[in-house]
Structure formats: structure tokens, C-alpha cells
Amino acid sequence: MLADEFELLQRLLPEPGRHVIEPGCGAAAMARRLLRQHPQMRYLGLEVDRLQLARNLQDVPARMRFIEAAAQAIPEKAAQFDLALMLKSLHHVPVALMDQALAEVARVLCPGGHLYVSEPVYGGAFNEVVKVYNDEGVVRAAAQAALDRALALPGSPWRQVAEERFATPVHFADFADFERRMMHPSFAEHHIDDALRARTLAAFAPHCGPAGARFERPMHVRLLQRLPA
Image (cartoon, rainbow, N blue to C red; front, side, top):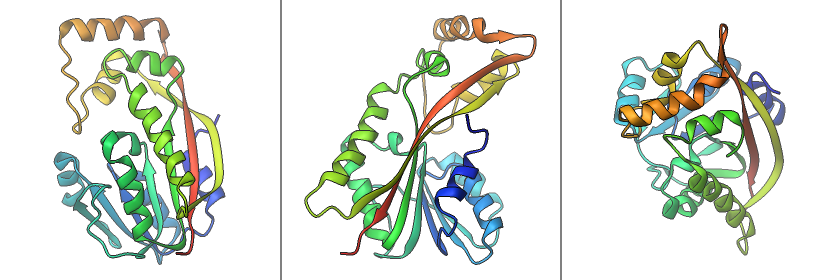
């Protein structure tokens, strides 16, 4: 059990480098903490969700930059970054473009730079609830397969330097809290009608008591390093 994944990132990468890129950055919560720890660090967040990007652009802290761009088409020159973060984002890349996305990340990383990939595991009680309305079994498996292929390429630009499996606690006050946080993300439309909402509530209800619902979300982290050309 790991309550705060930031602790793992700090342990695996105590010296993450000065230039960080994050495809699929979301709200960039982990990056904001990294920048507080490393005053010389500069950050670029890529986001295709225009609603989330607009929120990010409302208040851009110093040393951070956000642009609309996808992992499979990074509008940056080669060898510009020391660290790339993909936090629950690789499985959101279209399956047919995952290999291209990893090649793009390799292109913009400096030799010796790192790619930190954190992906949810398809399993556990929390996943059983979520998959009622959003079954990600295929795309999560595809994300791991893309990493395996990238490592197995003849003359691969990558080597894997660490792998960690852990679980993080997730708490919801009630089903309304779950619905607000999980069922209506701005980056996807799950087409949730009354019947689908009712089925999700039925899966959620057995886990909910007076103190709310507590789950463990299994996670899989792989740390890759960019090899010299």
C-alpha cells in the first residue's frame, strides 16, 4: 500500500533533471509538487482535453508551460527533456498510436533521460465498479504491450531500470461523490443514461458504509531510461 505515489517518484528519481515534459498532463498535480522540490526545474504539459487545458491556462505558475498537443505528435525539438511523465495517460492514447507516442517521447528525451509510466492495473474491487460504465481492459493491456514492444525493438532506445507494483487508497464519501469525480470526466463521454447509472450504483453500494466507500487501486509503474543513440 502506498498512500502517496510522489514518494515513489522521489525514491526512483531523486535527481529528475531540469526539464520535464508530461504528455496527457491533466491538472499536472504531480508536476507542481516536483517543481516545488526542484527550484531549477522547468515543465511543459501537453493536453488534448481543451476543457482541462483551459483550466490549466487560467493560472500558470512560474516555470510551467501548457500547450494543446498529443503524445504521438510532440511539437518540440529532439533531446530537450530530462524526464517524461505519463501518469495514467498512456492507455488514453489511441491504441494504433501508442508505439508512435513512445517513439516521440524517446525523440524529445536527452540520452540518459527517463520516462516514468504509471498505469492502473485492470483488477480489484474498484476496477469492478468502474468497468460497469468504462471498461478499459483492452486499452490498459495495450499500453503495457506497447512498452514491451518499445523495449524489444532491435536497437531499442530504451532500457527498463525499475518496475514497481503497489496499491493506492481511494475514498468516496458516497455514490454522489464517486459519480462527480469518476463518471463525467471532461476528456471522455461515457454516455451514462439512467440504466447505466443504476447498474454502477448497484456495483458501488456493497462497498459503501457510514464512513463512505474505501477501495484499493492497484498500480503498475515502469521506469525507462533513454539510451544514447
